[in-house]
Image 1 (cartoon, rainbow, N blue to C red):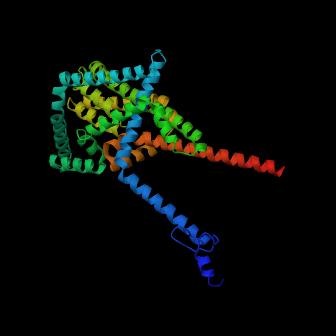
Image 2 (cartoon, rainbow, N blue to C red; image 1 turned 135 degrees about the vertical axis):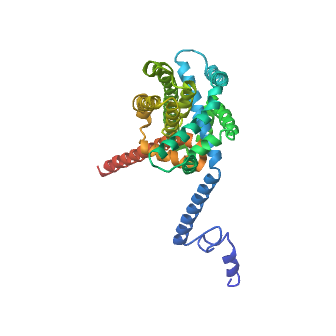
Image 3 (tube, one colour; image 1 turned 90 degrees about the horizontal axis):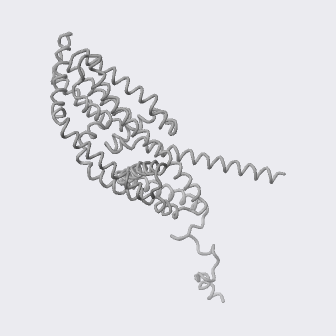
Length: 380
């Protein structure tokens, strides 16, 4: 019997669960098992962060597709209020209307303002040269080359503007992929929601659907405010420069149509886009004299303040409620890290993070309330 004992100890079927000791697949010491679990969680977290950074461009493009899908969905929902057509037909109408607008914009830009656009760089260069001459007249020894060097350093420091203007052609492929994926998501959003919810625990799926619903609502309102602000700024800029200017100055501001389109398009990039469009407007205004330059500056202030404090707050800011400094900081960080795409998606991403944190806080509050009720019931 004594000779059989070692065989019994080596037999895993007959030995107890604690007789096998430690092994690569089992850790018997509770303290060592706790430390191993902590190390494993840290390793998984660091690996997930590294993978996210590595795939950040692709993930940002997917988020852009969801933003585009929210814009399409918002247009389809708006049409649903006035027409009984099915969702597929309404999405088709939105896409066709968007395509027709882009075709019209390209035709208008090509036939009406192409010469103005060609003259625009020369006008800016002439204005910079006049600024250098004025500075020398005031006793400041500065040349046009120094202004160009300072402008170059400024653009390098901002980073986001350089990439936004220089990466337009390179980002066409990404924009096309974003549009295609966004269309697929807009056509069948429930399909993708169910697929993602399927990977979550059953008890978490209700919270996930509610979070997605709130994110979708916020995204639609945010994008609606952005588009309305763009259209408003473009129309008001053109009216002030082409129609009101002759009444005040006796002549229209040059390149009014080009400036209006630039102002409207750059309004899609909050804060930074407004600064760029304002610089263009003032430079063109001073090409017609000091009075026209001052008028252009006043127009810029009126448009940006009216849009920033009346139009956008009524549609977007009351819903999203983001601090302007936080939005600007997010734009700078995203612009430096990811270029023009990060700059455009900075505030939608910040809004979604805010919704997720609010939902997490609400869930924690509900858990605390339930725990307090159960504790009170147990004490009674």
